[in-house]
Image 1 (cartoon, rainbow, N blue to C red):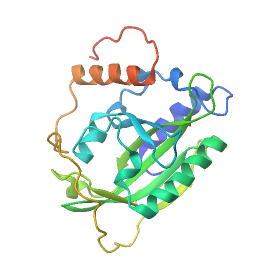
Image 2 (tube, rainbow, N blue to C red; image 1 turned 45 degrees about the vertical axis):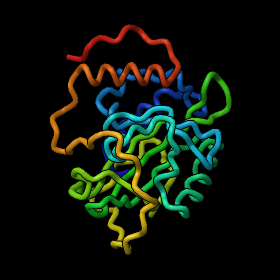
Image 3 (cartoon, helix red, strand yellow; image 1 turned 90 degrees about the vertical axis):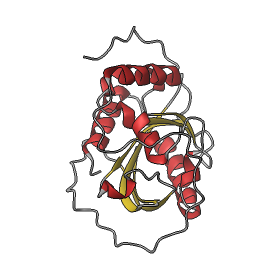
Image 4 (cartoon, rainbow, N blue to C red; image 1 turned 90 degrees about the horizontal axis):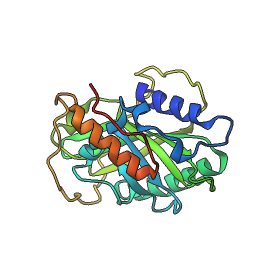
Length: 227
């Protein structure tokens, strides 16, 4: 893994396990990951071919120019990548190991490198069927300024070991591939936020926490505004 936020999420996931193979989704406290909350998402992967977003943070949705909740995670990947990712999801759920996906994302502005980390979760004591994830840019973000991602292509993947050291930012240098055809533009339901925007307001962050609590189907203490 290259991005610090990927390490933060995996570290939190590891602490939640408490000796179990994977942590239960209901143990997640949104306040504990408030620093990265807008980039976090939850997937229901009971059907690994069509993993579905149960919730996606605002910054993650902005990259695709639409609200992602209820949509198919695989729909934005090229066909070959979808098949590989489905196999990785099944293996991750079976072994209890998180996955790190390195990809190239295409927008009208060009290509950008991304890193997506998915950590398996159980729910209500049942067999693991969900993931908590985070997706971060690891290359020049210029191509996404005002341009939503329309397609992604998987270039590398690995199963994450706990306490894995932070990789060098220049370790992953894939050669520029030929442009691949996008799978069609996604519905643009709202304006994409400029990446030079100011930090999310406290009230917006608190609202996102409430949404995450709802999506996680947990009962949490009253959430106060973040100062």
